[in-house]
Image 1 (cartoon, helix red, strand yellow):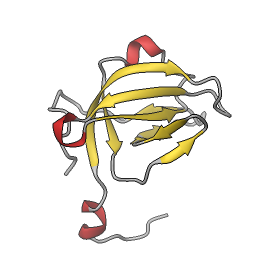
Image 2 (cartoon, rainbow, N blue to C red):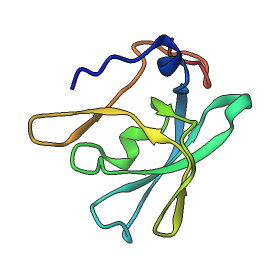
Image 3 (cartoon, one colour):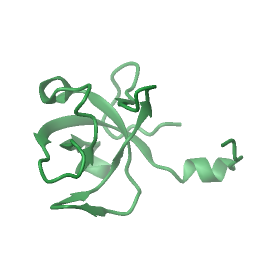
Image 4 (cartoon, rainbow, N blue to C red):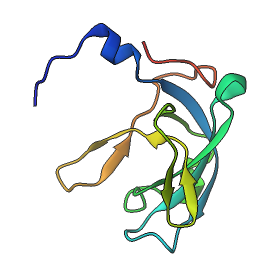
Length: 113
């Protein structure tokens, strides 16, 4: 899966840093998931999504953590919630997702370059 893209393709993806404000259980999800609310700064605002990260993360450890999200996908209805961003991460060998985070604190809304 090494399909070349252009610089323009890459810059079209809005990868922004946000801080998780709250994490709720999502019992209506098909697979165990959380509802995550994150602040992406003044330009983007506060957004929600669902994420299947319950196997390796607890709600309490996620609140206050900075994450990287794709904020320019169309809104997607997932059961009773509207997913407004895609939480990014990496699959481990056991198919669990480790979230992508900035190495040091940066302002909410900062764009990945």
